[in-house]
Structures are given as structure tokens and as C-alpha cells.
Image 1: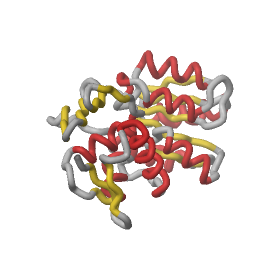
Image 2: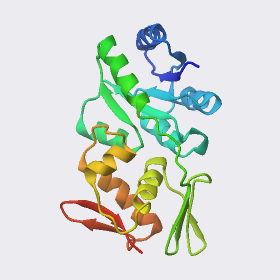
Image 3: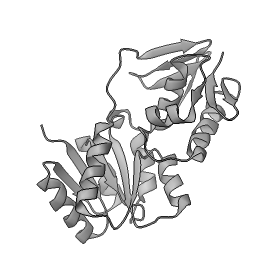
Length: 222
């Protein structure tokens, strides 16, 4: 079965360029010329990968990515930003929204296909462990829920994956590189991206569970 890629960009020539090269390499392609249409197609077709521009009418790429990460049906959908914006803050915004990779335009076709194949290889395989409880905190991967003392919390997709990963071995200090490899699948992300996600998790489940080990990484404690 062909892997399905959704392309979302408001420039028709970019859509044609991407569609041609990706179809030539065996992918099934869907296209949308604005963020709102892209989100609707993602919900309907549940693609393996969404390639997003950042600046688009009706809904920008960052907003689309955030909405995708809030939908359990799209939990396994990968998101790649392909943008002319190369600023650090734009890239950080993309990863903070839940992107799996970020590429700047222009890009040569062979390099594009190489990056697309690489990101699709990262597609996470399901594991036998779907539910973990540590102290009063319980996380359920199948239901995509987090609860503590009967109260339920909502986390964005990458926040959820990061918390689940830390809770797999309570007390273990996970290095930043281990976290990047597991949660971001070795995408190029900065320390600030991890810190932003940790801060958001703490805001929702409390400050006491995730401990910072200075110069090393993070651990989950009761």
C-alpha cells in the first residue's frame, strides 16, 4: 500500500513541484492550498505525513500542526514543515507545535525525497505497554488520557509522548539526546524545545513530578 502524503501550501507552483516529485517516487498525494482545507483533509484521510508551509491564508501552518496534534485519530501522522522562513524563532515555533522535522526552501528534489523517506522511517511502532501508573498519575496511550487523583488533563501530542516516555522508567534520568531520539525521532531540535514541552507538562500536572537534573536531562518521580 502506498504511503499517503498531504501537501499544504498556498503557492500552486510549490504544490505542483512537490506532487510531481513525490508521486514519481511512489507516494499517494493529497493537496490543499490553505490551512483550513489542509486540516479538513487530514481529518478525513489520516495521511502518514503532512508537509506544511508556515505562512498560509485562513490558518497558518503552526495552527494546523497544533490542531493535528490535538486529534487522537492523527496521533501517528508525522508533520514536516517546508518553509521559506529560516529564522530560529520560526523553527522553534514549528517544533513547539509538534512538528517532526523542519526544512527550509528551496530544496532539491533528491534531498526532499531523502528527507521524506527518513522521516517516514521514524514512524513509531506500537508497543505492548499502553497504560502506566506512577503514584497518583496515570497515563493511558490507547485512550490518550492523563489523570491524577481523579482529575483529567489534556496534553498536546508531543507533550503526551514525552510524559509517557519519562514515566516508562520512574526515577531514571533520561538525557536530552534520549528524549530527542524517542519523542522527536532524531529531528534537529534545540534544548529550548524540550524545555518548553516540560514547562507545559508541569503547568498541567503539577511542578513536583518531573525533576530537572542539571546538565543531564529529566526524570519522573512520585
